[in-house]
Length: 499
Image (tube, rainbow, N blue to C red; front, side, top):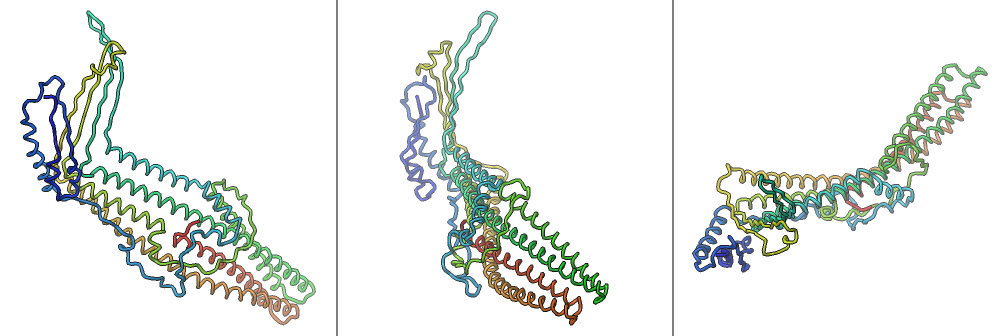
């Protein structure tokens, strides 16, 4: 009997009610040769046993587990997103896909482009995407036959003779993924690779945002240093004024000491501003992938904040933010791993084959008549594993529950970031207008204070206080201008806008 015949058509009809068993509905015949020298098949006892075997297989599968498939997850259905943003007067128009050009700053655009091309953390994130995709391919390889070939030469020495032979051997193994267990595991790895790709996209947006915010911080630090320098020049003028009046006996020595103290404090503030410049410069240079040599110079003014932003609808956030996309992909991967774990309770069908040829003459290796080979089919059904398989199912179900709650938390945090940035922009604009008015008033009061002091109408402390008020108002105004720009970047990032 050269082979046994396994016809799976009957089994397919027996398991028609279970979608997982649709693979058996195909007419399939597998011939498993036992040995080439066996007599020809005249009896078919084994064939008469196969219907019972097919019925046994289907019975085992129906008893051990139900057909497990991963649930369908929909981002909008899973999250109770509001119909519109709670922030008053928040526009609901679709958000622009590119936000960098809205600042109309060529230097900023060039720096962001440089960072996206050269930042080493972003390159590492890109490598993680490549590794995750290759891991998905590795896991998917288990669905295909594994074939290996080995060629060699063997020489045996005996006391009376010495022989040598060339060998060409091959082996093949294949687990037929009837129930989709391996496919579900591969799908989980692929979904995790999609999550890593979303992480990379999020890292790219975050890098662009951090570069822009560091650029604005550098501009502010330079402007703060310029304001401090101008304040020192003004105070040195006051020192000369008081020193002259003291020399003429028109003022006390205390006044001179007070203005000198005030000048020293202003010089200390200037040193702090210059230190902040070098700190921000080096941080920005690292983001750009450059050596932090404090060589990046830019003394431009802060750009005007863009006009009010169209924030879109809350439901759009669920499909555009990279962290939400990544969280959903990881949840789907967890569902696929639950499906794969449940299908470990089902029988596994494997095919194995081995063969080869050997000959003292190398030319005889290619003679097909010299090849010896065998093919075997096996079925393995878990019976008792000490609860390991069911514990594995519960473990993956716990991971899926964790991923589901993590997604919900990520979504709530995303909504909070948008609402917070929308609300902050309104308050920051109001604060900026108030500080702008404060700067104008303090500058006017300082001029009046200088005139009044020259006329002997006010004390030196009043004059010094006017200078400090002017410096503080100018510094606060620059700070809130930068905060407005940084908050707009935070809003773009919270909405998942592109670069």
